Amino acid sequence: AIHSINQLLLGSVAAGSEVTIRGWIRSRRDSKAGISFLHVHDGTCFNPLQAVVPSELDNYEEEVLKLCAGCSVIITGTLVESEGKGQAYEIQATGVDVVGWVDDPETYPVAKKRHTFEYLRTVAHLRPRTNAIGAITRVRTCLSSAIHRYFHEREFNWINTPILTSSDCEGAGEMFRVSTLDMVNPPKTDAGAIDYAKDFFGQETFLTVSGQLNVESYCLAMSKVYTFGPTFRAENSHTSRHLAEFWMVEPEIAFANLKDDADLAEDFLKYLFKAVLNERADDMAFFAERINKDAINRLQNVVENQFVRMDYTEAVAILQKCGKTFEYPVEWGIDLQSEHERYLAEEHVGAPVIIMNYPKDIKAFYMRLNDDNKTVAAMDVLAPGIGEIIGGSQREDRLDVMDARIDATFKGPAESHKEALWWYRDLRRYGSVPHAGFGLGFERLLSYVTGMENVRDVIPFPRTPGNAPF
Ligand code: 4AD
Ligand code: MG
Image (cartoon, rainbow, N blue to C red):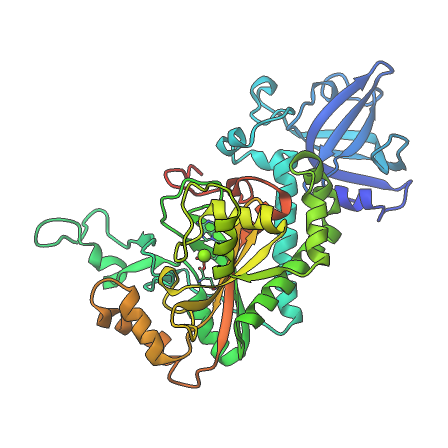
């Protein structure tokens, strides 16, 4: 029977059974005694399975001795307990079928040796064959399913919010415009230029920056909802934490305030960390050994301890008093920069920290204005090594207050923004309730969990300014 390598290494098949595995060669070693050892991976677990191949096989000289990293094979044999350390089982091969050769082993782009992550991005189509990207891929899957499980267990409905939209949720003007132009005969303005206003059958259309506005509408009917999907930001950021296309998890809860929101974020993150520690111990051991020696410990600490929470005002005071010179000077009213966020999380707290109640002028129009009239009920969760991983808020549920914020926030004629948001404003007119939610950047979460320094290495095919080759 055909088995995954994971099933075999876990011991779900009795030793002595006839088994077949299918996968790719990671390495081949030949002993003088006329035996070859093949390490085969199939993506189902961190460790490869060793196949012990005797020289008696018909194709031993002709084929087995020519196998190299990257060749695809089907191996049949007897599963036996292994005497070698580091592996519980191995296969005594009775047949090795070569399915696909590697054209030129000398130039195989991911031949078995250490490659830099920067280099691996240039061979994004082959990098899943490496240990690191394989491990990241399994952790990504584990976290995705833990996310759905967490919400499912707590009566949240999953809302598939649209990717094509006309609203700019964050109001930051960082949207990709989608064109339906007929490129052969594009509509022209009177001046002869391409008439982009005729996008999407006459309506300007963009890729969403966040599903929040849509998910709020379902929240105010279904009580607890979330959206989890790709989002897009046309910001020209060349950093290790920005992508032009990234995945975001956005829960939204009704009859809830900022504290409830922060409690949800804390409970959610702890659940996810526990899941990955339990379910991907093999991959996490690799990250701890090769990427960040603290990778496992720090997650365990987070799970066991309460998150530190502090107001923005207090965070500013800490930054001003800490004696460190920042590139970007700190004063009340600034948007915290990555260097400030990292100081707070890494040096001041040494764990994720929740900063709450930011100045209204640096935050989006939908955040609830506090009684001080200066701050909004916003929160960010900052993590060591990466900075902001979550941004959220209690939403403004009072129509008059929100209208005033729309007027103050958006450039251009305020009426048109209110018109465009007519449906969102309706939610404040019909059974409005206090509600709150947040967005967790999935790649930033993965960066933190694995210790990988660049978000480009935790998404299969990264899209960044000027770089989307595949
Ligand atoms: O703080 P942001 O912009 O918040 C929102 O979009 C809200 N509408 C979310 C909500 O309340 N439902 O983005 C949320 C998170 C950030 O904390 C960050 O983790 C991630 O999304 N993020 C990015 N990740 C990768 N690349 C980018 N360019 C990102 N921009 C934001
Ligand atoms: Mg934010």
